[in-house]
Length: 226
Image: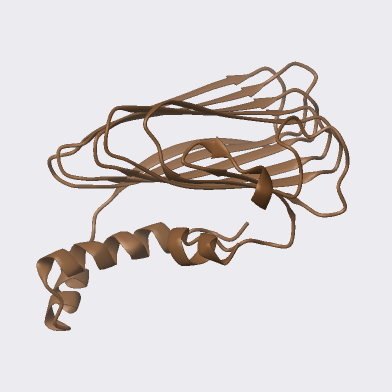
């Protein structure tokens, strides 16, 4: 699994794994079968989704067991029109799902994440980062759903984008909250390097292209820990 860190900057944790590359499930490097999480594992479950995708892509994660931690690490690129949907359904009381999603868009990307709580005291936290390259178009949507009789859930969907000035981005947040949550947050922001940061890197001897690449790497690496 070392290539996950070297190529995609995803450090595998001690966990049961479900691995996808270029939108395809890889049973040879996964320790458990793809599909709903219906049993309790002694370790967290780490879903890894990496590579280049195109066309229509969907990732469905269903947690049907109590007290199961599940992590999702995504690092994908696209150059052509692409649809990417992530749907998470958590029916396991006190089960905890946390996602780091990294999107590098050089074409046209339609991304949707859905967090569906169907039991009390469930957690679904999404952090999504987007690099919107020159002349790209990005539609970034997130929906949080907390059903009736599902009190004390924790839900958070956050989007941050680093965009070229020619890129077009739309953020579409939505919530349907039918119970009293412990937390239900939704946010979106655009990040731009400061003049001081750019000047410091240029004075260190980096070219304009190298400055751009350095800032993109720093932006993608600035994730809170799971």
